[in-house]
Amino acid sequence: MVEGAVKQLGGLDVMVANAGVAGAHVADLTELPVEEWDRVLSINARGPFLCYKYAALQMIQQGRGGRIIGASSAAYSASKFAVRGLTQSAALEFGRYGITVNAYSPGLIDTPMITSNGAEMARLYTELSPLKRAVPEEIAGLVSYLASKESQFITGQSVSRVPLLQFAVCSPASVVADINQWRSLFRLMPPR
Image (cartoon, rainbow, N blue to C red; front, side, top):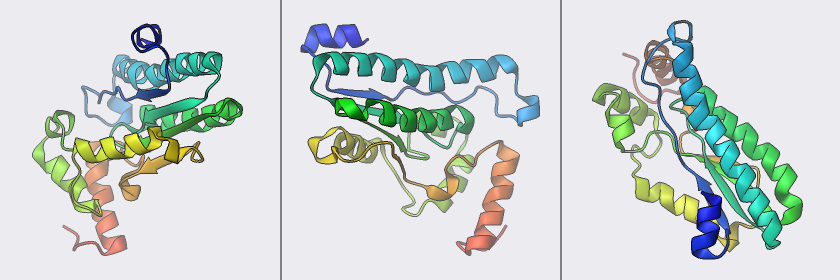
């Protein structure tokens, strides 16, 4: 991928590692098939690792710095939390080359990946969002900023849209219990 971008564009200044999948099985940890765990981690954690690695090698070779940005999110927490740790480590390692490394954690965005899990789950998450909405274009604005020259002093950060839901999701049953608990605790709305 990096070779192709360099060949077509003459260099690499920004890498956005945005690929991600949700598990095919919505289950408690004790019921999740190991094969599904491996598949999700392969895409959501190994994928960004490879993007970060090869983008950094190219940017170091070019000698002009760059921006590496990863997608991290609450919807499939273990694999995406790995992106947060990878981002912080890579920021420390690549900073001396003028490369910033950041992540964004948009929470639930109005995309097919969210709507395929059912309207009720999306509605429950949306209730806890301070802004009650998000569309892909809004997240693109954040990513564009992180890729810009104006963000040159921001590195090792994970920007989150929904702090309460950040990496707190395990299973549908625990989500509903957590949401009811959060409603009471933060008095966002009456418990159900």
